[in-house]
Image 1 (cartoon, each protein chain N blue to C red):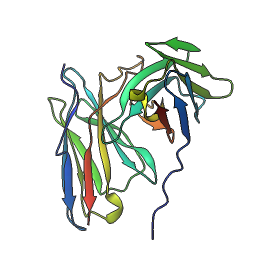
Image 2: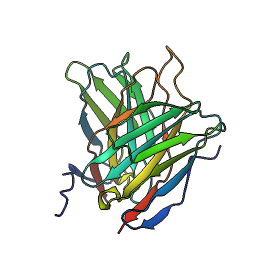
Image 3: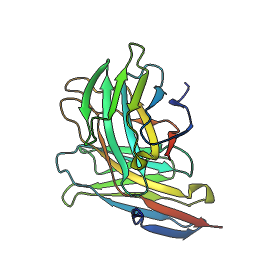
Image 4: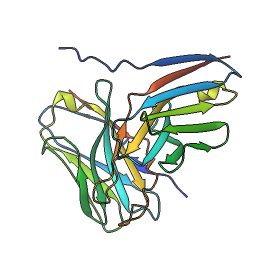
Length: 117
Length: 114
């Protein structure tokens, strides 16, 4: 099976712009989560989507948003970019835990490296 | 101002030695734990996981130990190889309402000397 893919791999934007990142999960996986990785804060959870619904959200401002499509592909959007948004954005997919079921392993993509100037 | 980076614990071992990487987790209600390996320029790669109803799980050259009493995880790598050099993260899965949310430790940088 192909792994999690993310596009683009690298992106340079300027402050105030917006950006959309894309993630294609492993075939059959219904849950997609997004994480931000920076040298200062490490790996931090942004949000998780399952069956096109956001199930959980991390402690990030409303400028960070996402969505999931019926084929489980997901996009995240950051509006009004700030210098501090420069980071590696990671997408992870899993089968997705059904109610009362066990947690499923999350598998990560290679990330999108965003630089805000 | 300049941002302060996370101080990553480091571990340096000789090729062929065994490595032990430790991690403390925060949520006593967490019941699923994962170790990831991240090489430079790549996303985290799954190594091994363990559920809270176990205290030890073995994979190929890796063993994870879970001590729920003190909220501690460890990853043991046998016969460490240069290709094992990477940053290792432990993660606890904090599930609320069925959602998946990983909370990561700060990571440990492992360097294997040939």
